[in-house]
Amino acid sequence: MNLYDELQALVGRPMSDRGPQTGPDPVNLPMIRHWCAAFDDHDPVYTDDAYARGTRFGGIVAPPLMLQTWSFPTPMLVGIAERGGHPVPSTGRSPLSILDDAGYRGTLAANSEFEIVRYLRLGDTVTSETTLDEVSEEKQTRLGAGFFVTWLTTYTDQRGEVVGWQRFRVFKFRPPAAATEAETGDAS
Image (tube, rainbow, N blue to C red; front, side):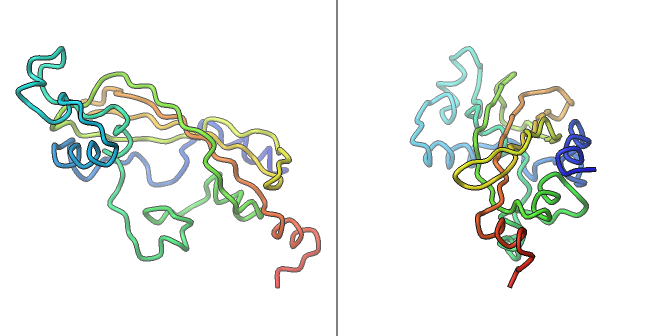
């Protein structure tokens, strides 16, 4: 089986063996305040309870693009560089590890799209589950040859109701030095 076919066989399957990820903390005001400060977003519906109660939301809501932050695991900083920036260790084969092993070690984030079903409220607990959505055929770019890999994360609340989706795409490429090593068999 060639690399493209191996990757296509994984479409629709989980991106890792970790399973669904439930955030370590419920949606909370201190994290919302930090987010709003970092992004210079001072909409009072995110931080001012009296104001927010008088809006269509009836209370404080989290900024919609915080969706993914609520299910992030607490990062383990030791070994993060060796894991390619992944916040927690992963075991087993994934589309990204298959590409890494085949010499496509470069990673460039290409785009991210969110679809928000509903705003999150204080106290909501978010769980995410990520599956491989699609893999392109190999493309030749100035960065090198590589594959566009897209995954879809579904976010649910404590009742199991979908609150949003995120489609995230990266370009996994073989850096020119890695391509030369693969062709010559010289990895010295």
